[in-house]
Length: 297
Image 1 (spheres, rainbow, N blue to C red):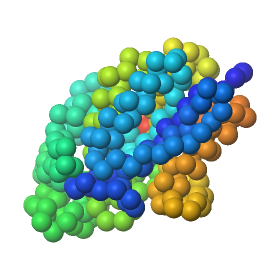
Image 2: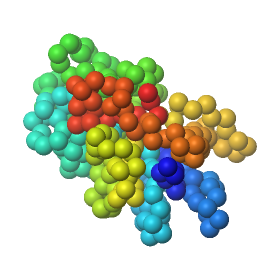
Image 3: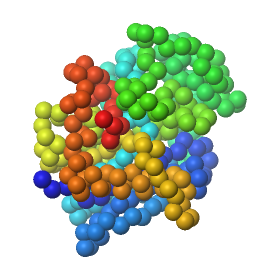
Image 4: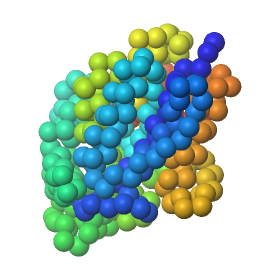
C-alpha cells in the first residue's frame, strides 16, 4: 500500500476582529511535493481570513490540477457537541446543518470585522433563552444572552460541555468558550463557513469523519477523493521554533511533518479507522455531528 497523500496543508486559524500577522494570527503550513517528488515546506501568514481562504483555495486548485491528493487540517472544531443541531431545530445531517447555519449567520468582512458574538448570543437565546451554552466575551459584547463568565452549568442529559474527542484529548478546550486564552469557540464559528466553502467549491473534497465510510478501507474511501479535510490539534506535537519562527508557525510545520512521516511509513491510514476503538453509539455521534481530531486514538 502506497502513501495516501502528496501534500499536507495545516492551518492555525484566528478569530481576530482586525488584520493581524505574526504571533496569534493565521498560519498556513504546507508540505508539498516538488518536481523530484521531494517534500518541501513553505508557509503563509495572511492578515485576514478572506485572504487565508483565497490562499488555501489557490493551493488546492493547483494541487488538483496536477492530480495530487491533499490532506488539509484546521485547528478548530469541525462539529458541535451532540444535540446542538436538534436544539436549534435544524434539519438534516447535524454536522451539515450546523455548517449551513453558520454559513448563513456569520458575516466576516474583508478587514476581519465580524459578528460572531452576536451570532453566539442569538444561538444562546434560541437554545436556552439565556446565556447558555456559549460564554466568555469582551465587555463591549456582554448582553443578556452572552456573559463574560459561565453562569449556567451543563447537566446530564442536556447539551454536553465537551465533545467525545475533547474528552479523549483531555486538554482540548470546549467549543462553548468564545474568548480568552485557550478558547476555540470563536475560531470554530469563524472557520466552519470557510470549510463549508471548500467542500462546495471542490467536488473531489470530503470531510472526515463526516463523509467517511467506515465499512470500507481507507484506500477505498480516498480512491475518488483528492482533498480530505480534517480537524487537527497542533499542540499534540512538541514543536521547537526554528530561528525566526513563531510558535504557531512551528506547530503547523511540526504537525504537517508528523502526518507526512506517518503516511510515508504507511501508518496514517490507521488513524482514520476510529471505528476500531469506539462503540456503535459513540461512532454515530462522532460521524453525524461531533467530528474527531485526526491522530487521536
